[in-house]
Image (cartoon, rainbow, N blue to C red; front, side):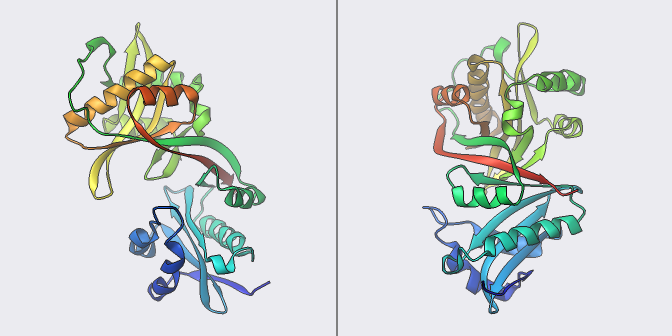
Length: 294
């Protein structure tokens, strides 16, 4: 086995690292776009594995709050795979998170990436959810709105009813009870819901005098443009989810946005609803894994 050393990434590592981070997917990779941010991130650790002082792999952790870390960007030079580098980087990332007093670490991985999945499961990470990505643009011509079936912004008085709804939801556990944004996730707690309500980022669908569905959405800058990012979506039936899907597209026009992204639970019901609302999907699904660090 090679002698593997793990250390913080240095600016001079860029030219040695980026060449093995260019063909991760068919479209390439994003490491070159986040390199400087990760290097300067005061709430994270950007680590490189070296073999004979040559960079052979990288990983990044980001502290999303005082207790929860997100692991991302694990890359290993193809010339050094199957030599324990990925495992060494993951263990180093977890230790770095623990030094920052994280109690939980999470990550997302493509469901087809069996090599990485086996690696994470050997590190005692457990699968807690699955999601798909859907995208849509505004309607070219707005369909007629039904005032009785339109989304309404939640108010602080709605918090208890939202919590009651989520406690019996069939969808909530499918995504690990998590809210997704920028491909990272945090647990949906009463505190997070209150924060999102205060930010006018919780949309409710009420029908027959009861809560029938909801969406948590925020405006974020993605790919150099402002987009609506939907980090959690729920509905009691396909009709409710379809109504929410249509209403979110309608909101794009009102918000003067050109695109929305939905982190959606991976179910046939949701797929059919979004397909009917003419959303695009790249047919790639993701698992979310987590591990307690305490």
